[in-house]
Image: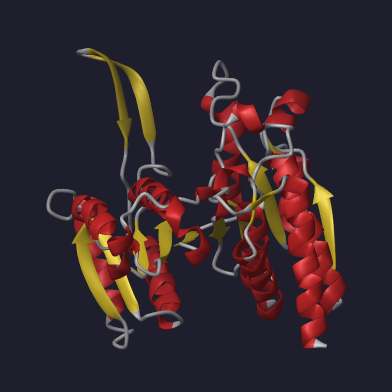
Length: 366
């Protein structure tokens, strides 16, 4: 079967890591007899440079007609002199709005072979942790009304935090459904002690939980969670929260894992179609660009998420995840995850070795 995928390389290391994802996914296609049609899409910096628009109509139609979108890297500091809606980074907001992307999934885990890279003490990290951050994309401060102007006291600005019952219900149902496939626990984070939007959030999440009596719901204040996840990360499984809280906390947990460049991310609509990126989408380490040293695994694993959620190809998705685990267990490493005793390799070699492991898995399945 053929699957159509739009590719937005983005900035910096974007093309380097996405090319390895394409390499790996094509190997999956060879093993499982699928065809993945990757079509380059003018969006972000490339589109601003060509057309003065981060997402021209032609590019939007291409994304809407594709089964999924693969995005490499997106710097936030490009063309700061332009109005916000004309900057390359605004492509994220445009894609979220036009494709009705409501849910951001960020799986964050620790590989046992790389546990020494975590800043956590051994007695805390133990055998590692596995947390699924589920962050709402429809409402909240990032997607609500904004204002900047001059008032009585000079310059002023407002970022509204808007939520309604339907938005919260959609994210809540998604969190509980994912929890049923994992350890049957959802921790919902808010600031209901003071924020009206958080009070509504907690009320609606609690109501939705009645439909999932087999899943434990824990309501927790975001500031408490920010501390507790450091001292007891094993206490968290599926974490449900708003866009702003989720954006901050997921970066904290990614840093605790010690291997942020290995982590993927997906932004989905209610049909599973969406945008698939590395967790570190805004990686702006200029020193590694074009040097074949960037770690492509976060992007490659986002390809695995694409196979699972956009195309319903569970076995194929697991093949990528198993291949990555084998490569890491055999101690192949790019510079960012290198430990004593590892074999240091580059970006392209990492993609090739993961592809080789997928071929091995294919022979085992034959």
